[in-house]
Image (cartoon, rainbow, N blue to C red; front, side, top):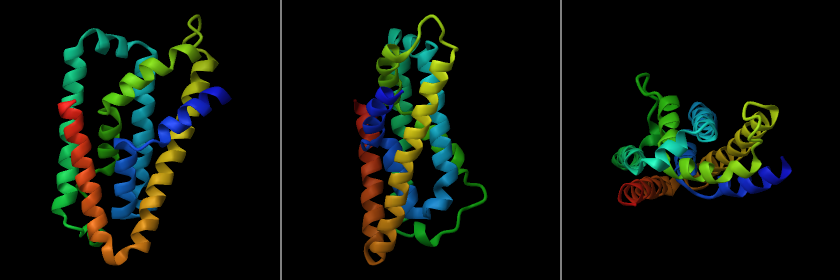
Length: 193
């Protein structure tokens, strides 16, 4: 498990859409208010990992159109989140969370729609799995290690956003706009490939 953790942790820590979203939530809401979305992201990554382990990724790789559809839909949603953040024009810190807004669902959708996770997990898990016992303790230990790594990294980004918010209160509007533009760029990159 140590080798798996040493493999997965740096990959989890790399900036991507999940970490950008966590950073943006940390800036916009603070760490504690971002926790539901962070937990949803961990759940989403876990679901993607389990699906890859049990073969859904094989189907997606055999049918590139399905993978392309997931990529385009995910990129469109991420682009939408970036535009929504940009249109707030730095006022996210002043807004209270709307009751109709479900950041848990948003976090889940961001994590599940990340095509890089599907491809990465398809490539990563096979060497670590016991093919004779896919439902065994080893598989669940890998998933637990993945959840721990992802939780740590998402927390680092969200806490980093919260710290940046406090340090840069006078320039927070620009930082939020930068994060929203970054989310839009990642969304476009996912759509255009």
